[in-house]
Length: 375
Image (cartoon, rainbow, N blue to C red; front, side, top):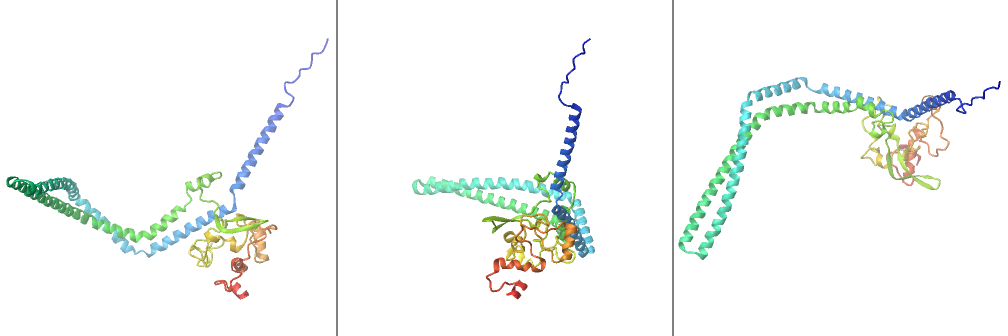
């Protein structure tokens, strides 16, 4: 008996093994995509901006508390009592206020009607005067007398219309003055109360704007950069200053304030503020809007050196002052020497070396003590 023919499979591969390969590949691709999104999102500069946001909000709240302590509580209590008293008085005189509002409405209509009537009479009077002049020149005594009487009648009527308009206008002004007098006391008390709390209210509003609510977390979530997040790269195009790179010039795009968030903002100095959250020293000379070297025209790297476009601590070209600082930076900030960066950032004690970039030919450089000593 012959053997049955071998049944050929309908596939030339193991379908189960193929499913496993696709499954592991999909999981691997998902993991790599998640890692890519995380690496793109978890930038150190975002942490600096978020921490500074918290510090600034805490500082504003502290200033608001200090402002509250300066407010005279007795005066504040008295002003609140005055506002409540005027509100009660206004409620008691509600019927009077309603009558005045009603009277103002009626007087407005009367003024409109009286003004229209006066203008109509004036136009008829002008016509009558013209006819009277024409009669004097062209017609007889009877027609002249008739034209004269008509003109006098219209002039009398026009004067009465004008008096009526003036009377209605005076009555309206009196009613408006009475209404304003009733409301003035309350408005004055409210204005004094607002003025007393203005400083505190302003600080509280600024602090509230820096609060990390649901909107903050949504706008700054991964892949949400298209919606103008709060945490973002800050940069300035420095006009007229270039990098000379291998026979070509590249415009400077300074991004230092992405991490040094308060560098060009006054008020964040003193021992309580540490780098990178401290204001630039001597803002009357550097980076201040009214200084000879405003941030929008010079940036930071044109004086300090470093890679202007970098937003990474090491790639920016920071230079440690000594071995101890180098060890700390290496351990905490993953610092390393940038072998291809020709102009690293000057160490802090040599920061004035950047002055000679522009002032090399000057006899004196005001404000630069070390450079002047060297000269």
